[in-house]
Length: 196
Image (cartoon, rainbow, N blue to C red; front, side, top):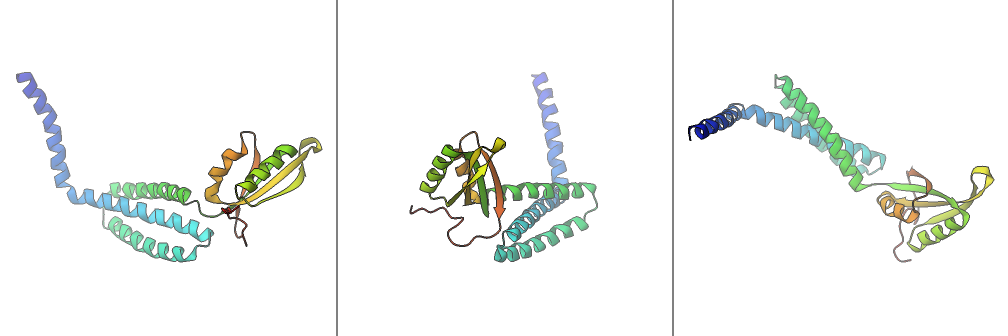
């Protein structure tokens, strides 16, 4: 019984010390969390702003820029009034987390349009192009030449970026293709036709 009491005291003492330290440094801990969170949010918005700017979604660029500036100013004010190097580390960690979060959000949004060029053997290419057309993709084909001058069919499809993951399984395992960003399209190009 004495051994259990001694073990319990050895366990409870560090926990009590930890809670008393948290209570003593409560304001500093809250400031660290605030600096981390504000900088993470600011960096996320900044990354999204850059992506929106390249995709020419201007109204959202203005909104994110305004919100980002306010959040960054508040985070910088918190950092400027602190005196510890720990605050700088939390500021940098918030920035790093913001880049990660911004990238994650951008990959989920999948904004933009892509040009996918697929190079196939002639007969396989004709079947694939017809299959893609049946699924509503806008497809253009033309003759190309592969290694040793062998005939190839080049299949070009302009698709919304979010459709790329759905397109890949249709192409099979052995595929040669290029994917390029498209800045602007006109007409039905770049849309998957659902009434086909």
